[in-house]
Length: 85
Image (tube, rainbow, N blue to C red; front, side, top):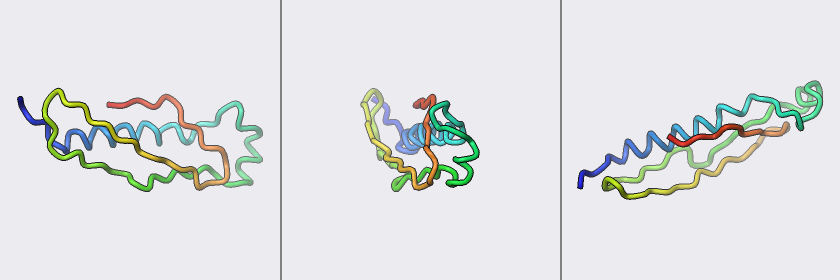
């Protein structure tokens, strides 16, 4: 079996993180009046662990990792259409 470089797995995980962040600026219908959201301040996504190195992974082996994200802003943070890569 050929080993899959850890950097490849890391790139896939970062792609997922970017997909999550990509939906942050969109306003959901449930968020309420836009003027209230602007007065309260925007959402602010924070990832305490923005990167993960899986090391050497054999081809066909599954690697799982959970990235925790937190909203430290004042407005509602909406994550839409998150995809892994």
